[in-house]
Amino acid sequence: MAKITPGNRVYLYQLLSRELGVNRQTLLPRAEEALVADGLAPADLGCADMRELCEQLPEFIKLTVFKKGYVYATVLACEEYDRALERTQDAGDKAAASGKPWKRKRGAKALKPVRPRHIEPPDKKDEKDEKDGDAVVEAVVPDGTEAAGGAAPAEVAAGGAAPAEVAAHEGESTSSVGEASEAAPEPEAEAAPEPEVEAAPEPDAAHAEEGPAEVAPSDAAPSGEEASGTGVDGPGAPVEPGHEPPISFTITYVPEAPSPDAIALPDVAPRVRSDLPRDFHADIRCSDEQLSLLYQVLPPNVDPLTVLEEDFRAARSTGALDGTRSNVSFALRYLQADGATPVRVTLRRSVRPVAGKRWALTEVEAGAAEEVGLEGLSAAACGPWSAFAEAAPDGVDPLRALTSTVALGPWDEALSALAALAAPEPWGEGLAVLRDYLTMTVARIVSEGKVAVSPDGAAASFDTGLLTGDGAPIYALLSPLEGDIPWQLAEFSTAGAGKPALYLTALAEAAFDRSVPAPDFSGAALVMRCPRAATPAYDPVSDRTVLLVPDGGSALALLPTESGYERIATLSLSDGYACARVVSAELPAWLRG
Image 1 (tube, rainbow, N blue to C red):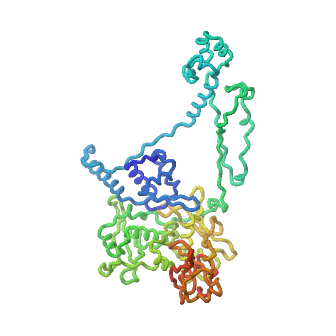
Image 2 (cartoon, helix red, strand yellow):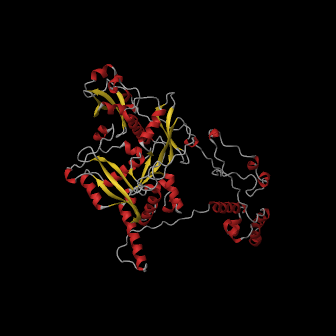
Image 3 (cartoon, rainbow, N blue to C red):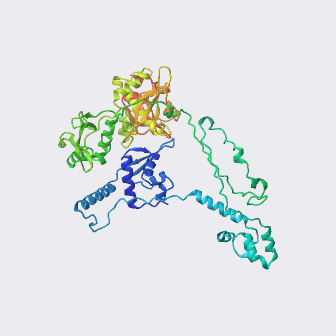
């Protein structure tokens, strides 16, 4: 059972937020490495493993389990623990300044970080030797000794007297005891410990399906005493039915696709500046004046700090930062009152840290607050999935899913490299369709857990779903990146690992089913005569596949349900084309325009 005190929780929050960062997805083994590096283990807190420990800390740790079994841990900001850590630091500074650290202000006990006590695991080898020794002593005591002498075999061993000596002192009254002592073999002075059997080495991929290696003759052959039948258990001693040989086997999983660790990654400079802050809550000072302005202009249900952090991460991932090394600005997702100018914020780095933070939010360009209505500023068009976002406001933002997973660098560089390798297609002006394609594909790949990560975490890749002119699949090769974005794009290549995203799971998603009830739409006659005129498209906001049908110069999105097709949203032809291209390159003529 977990034994975690409130002080332990604050200490673990301080440790993991410092080592892993806040709001950054990290593989669970890396979180355990941070714990072990601090001299702790999950067992110290009554937990069997790191996953159980994280499940006991829901107030600041979020676990994400993907379909392939990868488990990621995310440290969430906890204001209560942050205030406790600030109070502890302030109290220590005041005590040091006064020169009397033993004097403390009396009052209610404040929440403080308390390091868990490390518990050393027992030595399994010593326990094994003790058990083997006890077994040997019990075996050499002949039957009847306990009944005649009144001492248990363990007591005889503890007293250091051999069975023959016990019989010599106490066996004179009866001849049976004397005969038993004469017939008993003399025990050895010390029982030799059972030799340890080394575990078989982990088999390689080529021999993964073969059985375990045969035991060498020297290991399998019995000792001299065992062969002659004069061992400590006596001749013909039966083998215990519950006895298990101390041999362990290691099963190695052999993936179907090639592992990313076999791919040579090119040397790529970090696509995100390492000197930039990562967490608005922990690294950037946000004055009340600037935050107050954002609270006035943004919608009431929006957290300004969350918007700042997510949009700053997106700007770093796509190289959309402007400014110098000590003064950077970036755009938020919201537009000013004129409906065209984005809201921009500026960060400035100071020479000396203030309250441990070198960066500060110094300027917010949001226009006049009095020009904004009670509903707040409106968000800019996020992409061809905007109609789906309006239908599901609490859905996933695919752009944030991309930028929180992979640092692409400048969009134009990444898209140009991918377009040059892929088969020619009409990707639109500025490769806009390809940009939307890559964004939605990564969102689906992450949702399905199809990012192939090497065992050592030194490389990763995923299938982009595109093909070269020769029909070879194109992969995105990723290298690890320090910070809140775990991966960065190394290059696009035909050598990689990972399976393509899967979109179609039912026949009603692939073509229009005339036997299923559907709402009225203007292109019903065309679809009834040619069911393939309806085409599947991807809804990244709700992570599902819909069916697009023509409806008065627009694309109507229908969702297959048990009761029939349900109207979801209406898209423009250009937006419908982008969402449908994610699923297939074969699109009907009415959608191509």
